[in-house]
Image (cartoon, rainbow, N blue to C red; front, side, top):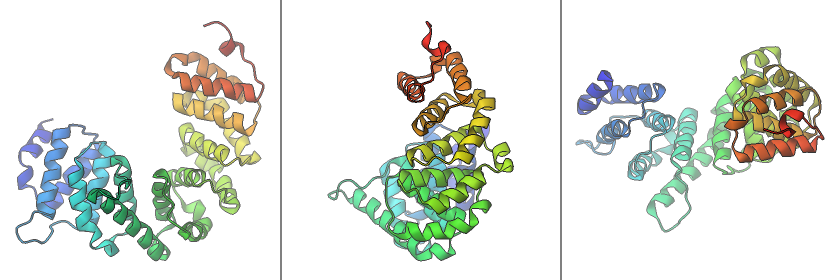
Length: 319
């Protein structure tokens, strides 16, 4: 607490590098005080768009990292801050790296910067930034790592934006390197395919083989597996090997699922028509934590049990 107060009091004395380090560290430490973040944001502006010499003291990658840190902290900074920084950065969009692209897309998604009105200057800027992101992603794809391509596509998908035919080139870029992707990247890839409603069979086949590797199943939390399963259900892809592996995990570790993931697992298994002992484990989990589920979750769970014709006394009996 004392360190945070000292930072806030001396923010005008911080160098550009110290300012970036303070914001990244605060985001990782989950600092949520709005005034603290506003003071740091004003410091970033002073080193970028309000310098006496006119030359920015922060590089593009540092600015993107700052925006990512604000998004991670889930702090709502005024739009004019984003407008000034993005206007400065889009002038030299060719300098963006794969990390910058992913961080920018993430920051815009978290702050909900959507181009919906052509008459507003800010919305025209958001659209210009997104066009440049899509253009340079297409232009630099052969330099971008497979994992970077996954996360950039994931951010486009989360905003319901289609980056163009580059997704087919990106799939060819990613496919040979699926085994080198991190656990988070595998989940992001599954979500991306589902949100684009694109059941790319060869990519899904490699994804299915990799996600059921023992080293993955040991590391990945059941909540992550629930997201992958949900993606398969949205694509209406019934991979028997994946379903068998996941059902074994959920049967034994159903107690580790949070309320949202429990509803997702029940919905996904119901949609794919999967039966087995996993439903008994789900019923026990829901019965023990029924007070934590909102009515929508309970309706989805009940519907899922009905789709596979499973009746459980724990759930259908009196409360």
